[in-house]
Length: 124
Image (cartoon, rainbow, N blue to C red; front, side, top):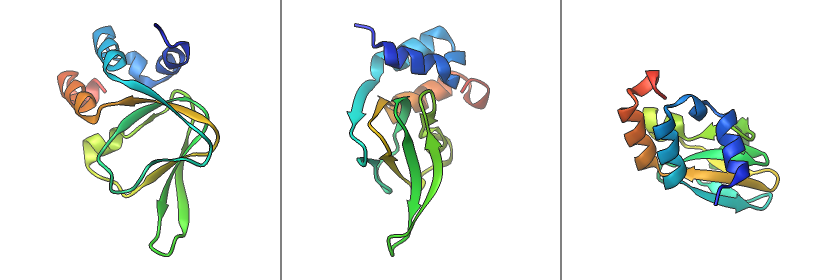
């Protein structure tokens, strides 16, 4: 069954510029996850993950040991999270759903493999 929201988000993202076979593999190997507002989707120090925002609003932020937070980025449908981590290594950020949100999770190993197969920066 085709998830129309995932298809629309893929079409809006830079992933749509990849070869059709690569996009097809990402689609086949990924999984949809929905989160209520306020949910921490990813915690600093967790293993690298990549995800496409399907719907909602996502906040990427840094937190100090004292609990202060600074927002680094907001992500909306069609935005992709986690690619920089695959290329540059771990980052100490957390990710939170600001409003009810859906993500299409892409395995970091699959994304890294497809990144390498697509020729690196020119292909992804």
